[in-house]
Image (cartoon, rainbow, N blue to C red; front, side, top):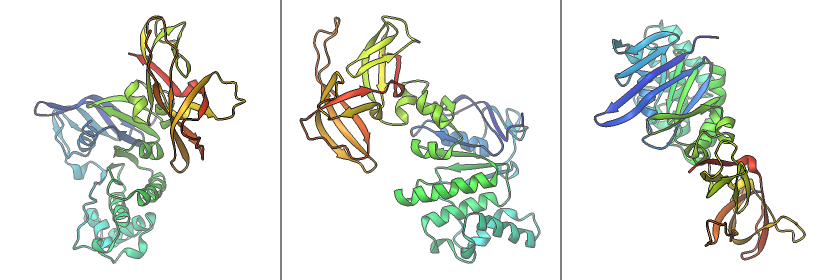
Length: 358
């Protein structure tokens, strides 16, 4: 097994009474892209700054290519860590040309090699024609590419990107992150990207590190986090869910939309069931024999999918004599817009439903 390009071992960090990172360990392999994702204030940017050396390490150890760059005995400054940084605001120098911005971190190299390295990096991000331009002449997406080229020019072992697409509008963001992914894959450096956007993390990452309250909740591939969430927070972070309550009986929880297996919980345990809207398969065909029927409250086309608001009155359980109408959402591919107050039948894809102890 190759030596990790970046290792964070038992890292904790606090700002006064606030614990920003709690006993967190993470390793990133050469060429791997890992996204740190989580809600605002979960500690992901602090963790990136600790890896970069922009914050003094308080507890734990940071290693780059097997060499310790920070522990309780001391720290190696950022410029000597063999890392490249891309900040949220790109931090380009307005008085320097694009080429000079990119070669800024190459001062220890001969002039000719500085220029060659800068031009190679600009070519990688498709900005060769703008080498003589100044930052104010560029769009937000172009500035982001220049910041990435500047980080790559020294050919670091590790690239650290902090919310690199947050300043771009939605349409431009999709294009720029697509271009960036291909550049990062070609570059081959270990890359850590901080983002609050779960879809962005799933698009970019080989592995996702999901954080909450300074701790690592789950680490794995995008498929693992989406299809096998560790807890209710992980399940709900990567998309809307319908939340239902129930009791485990016979290894499953009976819900108004179908039974959901719960082999990991004891019979009689109270449980929380999270069902993704796309797990509810709808049909408006009156010949459909599915036993579960719901009333349509509203239906909206959202482009690639339709969101259907449903109301159904579940059968009363023995220990729950009174029932109230249940409001749930279903997401259907393409255009599916049944009329308000019409009836639809529901089938459940239990693979997209998750049960956790209440």
